[in-house]
Length: 185
Image 1 (tube, rainbow, N blue to C red):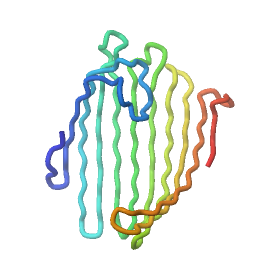
Image 2 (cartoon, helix red, strand yellow):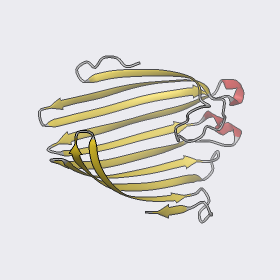
Image 3 (spheres, rainbow, N blue to C red):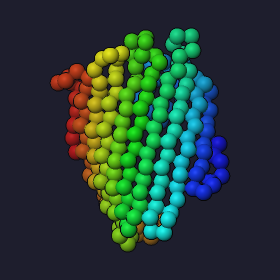
Image 4 (tube, rainbow, N blue to C red):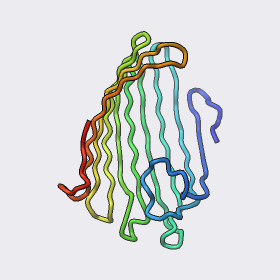
């Protein structure tokens, strides 16, 4: 549910009865039977002449099937975006805590990303960077991912864009030098 926007502010809330379908590439939960998830978020989006500002914060949790369903996984995140004179700069952060970690495995972690875009006429150039750390076991090592993307976009007409992107990624598994390390362009 989203409230109407008032003075730039809008509140949203959701409820998810089960978490076993359509995970949409999010880290797998340590139990396939997580349930009763809810989340709430507040965002602000407003222009002040040539200057634009956007900000958001959200919190979510769900019951974990391990431990009788009483434990809760939680996540909190937020971000900010500033627009001025063709530039857009943004930053976001999210932290996850996994109650199932007491059973020996976890999906706890955090990630942040930052980016800048410049728009001139029908053209836009952007550079973004993301850093992700995920614990794979309680008090254990972490998987680490770093990635960056440079992109160019040209609007050719209504609904038609030409896009060129270059990406770099570096994945480091929890055990340094392990065969699951990978990087490339």
